[in-house]
Image (cartoon, rainbow, N blue to C red; front, side, top):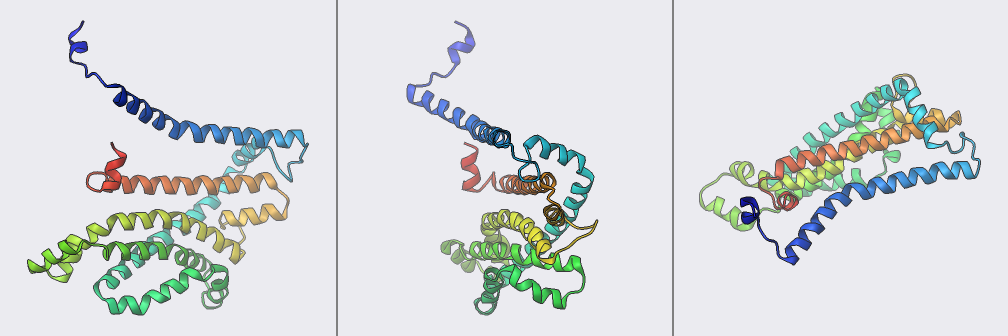
Length: 283
């Protein structure tokens, strides 16, 4: 018996079973979704073949992929326009949502006065608000940006406000006993405690900002070479160009997934060394 084998840890059956289960879960987390996706694409292709469906009604996956490459210049230039609106609206939502949440945390009177207006913006459909925006705003980009911001703003405001108000009362009392000012409590206690809530709202707002940008362009009826992906979908629908329509939809979907994954990674990197939700993921 070698020295390595002598010092190797011996796992009991229950611990060995748990290790195998964790290994299978790690593998299954990637393999199962990939297998289901491949199966769904195969069924999509077979349905088109079995029913002899023309491509202007339901194109085969290969036709969509070919269109994605053939029209890459047009589609990706439109994607850049959509991403510009998405990230600008998300940035404004972060600045406005966090800033207003801080004001709410500092004054209950401010929260009681302005929070209902934020709720009104959240529950009112953007298609109902846009006609007013269209009347009072002349610039097309500003219209789209305002619509996307309205959609992405509330999750950050709501989650950050909840986090700032969820500080442990004992810690808050300890800060007061030690003579901490309101702004010192905010900087050293309430903002760090609210960080997980803010990051949760940011992940939600990231997807909503993309949805808001696309929906705003649909409502605005934006067209032209400098328009976003929504205009390509509208144009493809009018021309019965289903392959391009599907290609644009797939591009939007993968963009939304990528935004969510990037924001999830940022959240994990920030919280992994101190917050329980991230620590559990590393076990």
